[in-house]
Image (cartoon, rainbow, N blue to C red; front, side, top):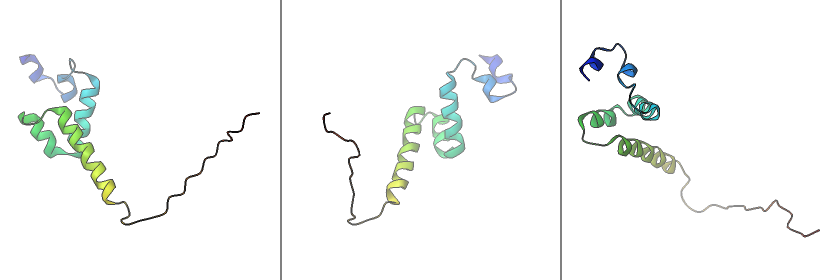
Length: 83
């Protein structure tokens, strides 16, 4: 394990780690460095940090929705008659 500390790039240090987990870590570092730091410190698990990031994105989308009542039009485009 000590050898891993001397490798040149961060991705070379994670060769024994799942590629998807590394990708999620990269996204977390790029979009939410504060959560990535908590993961590094061990305060939050990586999966929980990723869920929190998604939760924040959804909360922002919900905040952009119109408030009050509005009309919803529903149309069934399939012909359900039997031949």
